[in-house]
Structures are given as C-alpha cells and as structure tokens.
Image 1 (cartoon, rainbow over the protein chains, first blue to last red):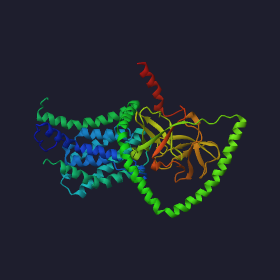
Image 2 (image 1 turned 120 degrees about the vertical axis):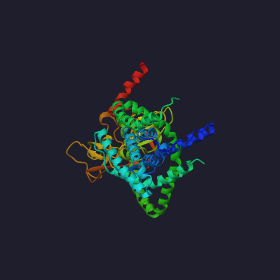
Image 3 (image 1 turned 90 degrees about the horizontal axis):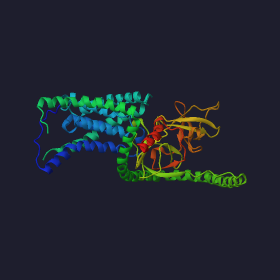
Image 4 (image 1 turned 30 degrees about the horizontal axis):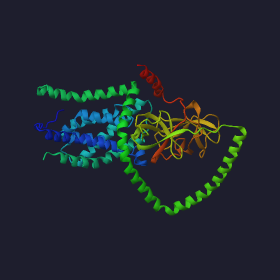
Length: 179
Length: 289
C-alpha cells in the first residue's frame, strides 16, 4: 500500500538533498545500529536468548507512524542482515520482518490513532505470532525440533523492550521533523 | 528518469512487498542449496563488522570488569576463606604434580619416548556474541593473514570452548559446544568410555551414545577423544552432572564470559561437517581456473 501522505517537494541544492537523504535513512541506520548492538557480549543473560529482536520493534514503529521511512526493501535488507549476522537460515528473518510490515500496513489506520498501551498490545500480538512462525520455520529448515524456552524468552524480552525502543524512535522521529 | 503514470506507480508499489516475500523464500532455497555461497557472504559481513565490534567491546569489557570488581568487594570475606582453603588443597596437588612430572621425565628418558609436540596456537579476542535465541556462536577478531582454519579447536583458560566453523580474513565464527549443532567426541576419564557431547542450546550440553555397559556417573571428568581425528585427545571439557532430562556436562570453560580464546592447530583434518568437505574441491577449482 502506498503512503497516503503526499511527498514533499524535491529540494534542489546539494546540501538540501544530503540533508533529506540523511533524514530519510536515519530510521534504517538506527535499526542497523540496534541490531549490531544486540551482538555485543554482555554476559550470561544474553546467552539465554535474552536479547530483544530489535528490528521487529523498529519495523513495527516506523511502518505504523512513518511508512515512507521504512519501505519494504529496507525491511528486507534488515532481515537479510539479521540472518547473516546470526548465522540463521537465510531468509527467515527477512520473511518475518516483511510479514510484520505487511500486517501493520493493513492495520495502520486503526492502530495509529490508539493509545500507547493498545499499540503495545498490538505489537505483542504481532511479535508472538511472528516469533512462533520463526520457531516453526527454523524447525522446518533444520529438520530438528528447536528448543522452545529460548524462543519464549526472546519473545518476552522483545515485547518488554518495546516501550524503551519506541521512546528512542519517537525522539528520532521528532528530530526528523522539517524545521 | 522514466516518468510513470500515478496508477502504474501505485500498482508497482503494491507489488514490491509480495515480490520481496517471494525473494525471502528464494533466499531460503539458496541457503539450503548453496551453502558455500551463503557462508562466503556471512564471512564477508563478519569481516566488516568485527573491527567495529572490536572497538565497541572494549568499553563494555571495562564495565563488566567493574561490575565483577564490585561484586568481588562485596563477597570479599567469604571469597577469601574459600580461596585460602582452595589454595591449601592446590598446594598439595602442586607438590604432587611436581613429583609426578619429575618421575614422568625420568621414565620418558628411560623409554626414549618422544614428548608430546606443543601445538601451535593463535590467541583471539571474542568480540561479539551474535547467535540470538537459536544458536550459540561467537565472533573472533583476528589479524589479517592469520593461521586459523575451519575445524580448529578453541579453548579458554579452563577447557574446550568450541570449534571454528567459518573463517574470514579478519574474523572467524566459533561454534560453541553448547550450540544445538555441536557434536564433540569425548571420553569419560574414569572409565575410558567413549561418548558424544551434543549441544542443546542450553548452558549444559548432553552426553549421549556412550559405549560399553558402564554409564557415566555425575562427577566424572570429561575430556576430548581423538575419535575420527577431529579433535586431539585429552583436552578438558567438563564434569558430568545429573540434569532434568538426563546426564549433562557442565563445561569447564566460562562460556558466559568469553574474553580471549586460544585457537589450536593440532594438524588434524578429521571429519568436520558435511559442508566443510566442499572446501578443498573449491580451492582446487580456483587454482585451476
């Protein structure tokens, strides 16, 4: 679905163009940074699958509030990056992020007007469904039943981390407003 | 730029998402069919991100050390008592070890037995822990032109950590022995029973398929076995513990806080993983063509 918001006029000067490029790529850049940050060796909690799947929150937030800044190909790129980084079967994260993008796109109009709590519950439902699918795909692709507890843990942490990440994204979104 | 009419552009925009979803399925197929290509992509990405992680992991290491320091200060008294008791015990062992070493040397001289060769090793810093919920792996930062190869064994100060599964120019991926895909041939030291140590993604891998009638008992020491030429014999792995679902092994290596590991080249080229076998063929092709 195309963004219902009309595009701003194209700026002419080089600096104005650079500025616009930086603004347009900021959400994706932040998502990549957050994804890389989850790989930092933080100790035993991180080993038990205790790291949130931050791109899920990023894709959800930007698709919901500024879909123009999170186009499908960026979502796909984030997914492939997550797959390659985590040595996951290639394509699994890409598929999940794209499904989230598509799913949020269909519910956008209803969800974007709601209070934060409702949005958070919406995110929790999406995350739970998609991480279940993630577990299923991995089990299917590796022909072995994957353990369930780390996945549950990951799901819980991802949902719990959403308010913090959303706060970060809101800060970024405000700074992106054209002055 | 080609000017498209608005309805056509909207129709194309609507097609992007399904096309990309189809592309993800395509990637899954490629990932299953051409593991060499996917591995090369992965190592190239690792080569790019590892220097970044190497910079970032330093302050984090400092913070972690500071936390450990504070915890150490709080538990100072009990820790001190424990260490004093352990020191006493170890001193007795030390005397014993010195005596045994002297005896061993004397016997070797008598028998003219060659000493065990000292293996060549590379020390590498663990900079990232990128497995997520479904894998236990770590990224190592290496110097360019390193000697690390696929299948080599990584140990920390206390015991086996895992094996090298992918090697790039400046990075290597380590498959920890707790990973669900890790299988390590081991030996129960007390009985000499051979077994397989299978990772389950849980902190303690499971011990399986032991030979002979005697079952490993909780408290037994587990060391690596040279079965199939994949590992050198006798590297310390862990201690058998009674788990909820069966016998598990508590690794000696501190897998939660890996900082530096030694990657040993024992000159072994035994059975690795099915995709590792592809490598020599590929190299031949490259030199030939």
